[in-house]
Every structure is written in C-alpha cells, then in structure tokens.
Length: 212
Image (cartoon, rainbow, N blue to C red):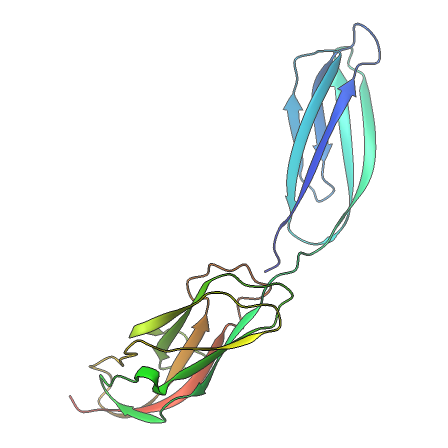
C-alpha cells in the first residue's frame, strides 16, 4: 500500500490578557482524527504535533488554543499531502529447467531477473526461490539454498541475480509426474517499502517426477 505521510506542526499560543494563560491546545487533522496537549497555564506556550496520513490529498487542519478564562482561539490551515516516491520490485524467472526429479539441485540452471518499476531506488533486498503446486504461487516453500541478496537497485533499472545456492527441490513430493511452479519473489523478507507488494513474484512451470 501507499506509504503513510507524516506532517509536523509547531507553534506558540499566547494568552489574550494577563490573567488568561494557555492550558490546552488541540488539533483536528481533517481526516477524522485529532490530538491535544495539556499545558501549564503560562502566558506563552509552545507546542508540537506530528501526524501520519494514510492517503495523499488536501486536508483542512484546525488548531484550537484554550485559556484559563475558557476562551478559545482557532487557526485553520490547509495541508497538501503528496505520495512519496517508492520502489516497486518485480521478479521474473528468465530461464529454468522444464522438468526435474524429486530432491534435484537446480543450482544456477535457474536465472532470475529483478526490475525496479518504481520511482525510487531500493536498498539491499533478498530474492527467494520457492516451489508451489499453485500457478498463483501460494502456498509456497523456500528451496534449500534458495535465497540470494541484491545490494540495491536504482529506479527503472534491472539486474540478473546470480543464483549461487543449491536451489534443491524438496524430496517426498507427490508420487508420479506432477506440474509444480517455481516462484521467484523479490524482497521476500519484506525490507523494502514499495508501492505494491502484490506484483513481486514471477513463476515458471516445472514438471517434477517423484518415485517414492
């Protein structure tokens, strides 16, 4: 989902007369939520608030200061919140065996490419190679030696991920010849903040023969 966007507000509330100190400041964020801070009744009081918006847009923020004489002063501001630029990783299996046996190590016969389709660079992330009996890729099981790491990927860039592990298929799968799917998952440890986590996978059909 979209990254939550944070806004900071700070200011000073000053009493309107000598015996009208500030005891409370409230803020309504314009999205149905609000915050308040209790103050000590001094004539001039500083305050700070922060808030995270879940969606971009224009919000009307209202700040109210209350004094010891039960008087209220209000200030209204319009806050424009924009969605932050984020990475968007997508994995593709560009080469792999079409058939294999139970427990077979695929090694570097599997080649995975990762694209960053987002507007921001991604830092270091993991790429996992899984096996699933569902073409949608869920549920899935990580292959032995099936995780590699990419140091980072610029926005709009692609990289071929070196598969240095054994990438060993599980033993004890369904007896006979069965279609499974290799599933490559970019950022499978969920360390990168992205626009969309739902498109991080690529699949490849593989026919596995098991004789138990």
